[in-house]
Image 1 (cartoon, helix red, strand yellow):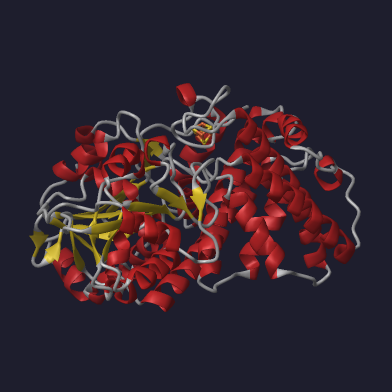
Image 2 (cartoon, helix red, strand yellow):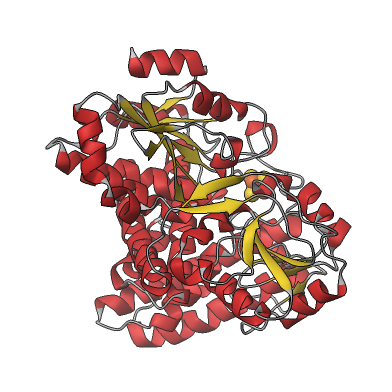
Length: 534
Ligand code: SF4
């Protein structure tokens, strides 16, 4: 196996024996084969689109197939075998519609009849076969960015939103990175276009989230628990949470958020459920300890699942998530998890553990834009920091905690995604009634951060790069790659990225990014603050 798509990749280079995430060699091969099979499909979808034919069900399959290979989503070999075969069926159907006839391996391969055969086929494919390391690097950037885009497309589709432009980009980019005659002159613009497609994907997801559940409003979320039966919802999926809240209503079960579900407390149509009480635990990488301690059922709705062997009977998966031996819930029916929650002890007593505030999406923040602009003009607010991104297990991430603590008291700290769990419960006070710590939401809400930045730039009649705003980001999985490409597409410069730079970026490609965007690795907190604030 060869996988280097996430930040925790072995030795900072690549997982070659088993994934640090728990991905086994056979699953790595099947994921590579699924990407390969989907590239075969995308070539024909792309050609058919040129003839005016599109199929939204095929576009959704494509997004789901790509998303299922994102880090910590699915570890079940049979799930990939089913998708590989389906990709080839759809490829053949799309071939007929397109009238095209591609002769490359992705467009012509026939899946083996058994799992071992598929694994062998998967071991022979993958972008790692590209010999030129710089071309391979940019192809990897595009593929990993596509995995992030696919995640947003899937989330948006669940809430009834889709974008033909994004689907067209996915088909095109998946096809283009197959080409062995493509150069950096074409690949670099294709990578920036990935950022543009991702902005659109995040926009439709935002429309889906806020159109269905209302715009988030500032909301206090308890960190303590209530005596009684309990169900914990993790992942990122708002629809699953909604269904769980509906199906647990009146059953004497308290529902808690975990990880990236935390910001869901701010949505009016989700917070209206009185039994959606509070938040339990921190970021995804602490789940083995936190889930083992949770005395109720757990539902993992999307990434990031880890080996649940200590609590296999208590945890359930939904959507694209899968782990061997864990019960998968289908068709929006959460009754197995609810029954498990009812059978378990639950919490023996109420506990107090303070609270955190969520709900500072762009609608809420821009609702007090006048106050913010005045505070900047009066010099009450000196600088804005966006400190966020993915959390992870590697050492060095305490940088982000220290950064939030050391940012001077006349600065605002905006945050999003699970990186915030490094400091989400710190009381940073306020500036003239504006909280200094503003939780914009999930990683899926990066669109909100972009909207806030653009609105501030408009208000001050300048570009985003001219604002007193610094991006200090942490990355782990491939949604972060897509978001980074979006920031590059928007021309945003001086981003600080950590805890380490991606293994799939070669020195030459990094030079291009530095020259064009002045992207830089995080240093020490003191040095970075001095460089930013002077
Ligand atoms: S997803 Fe990350 S940890 Fe898992 S195999 Fe790939 S690089 Fe390794």
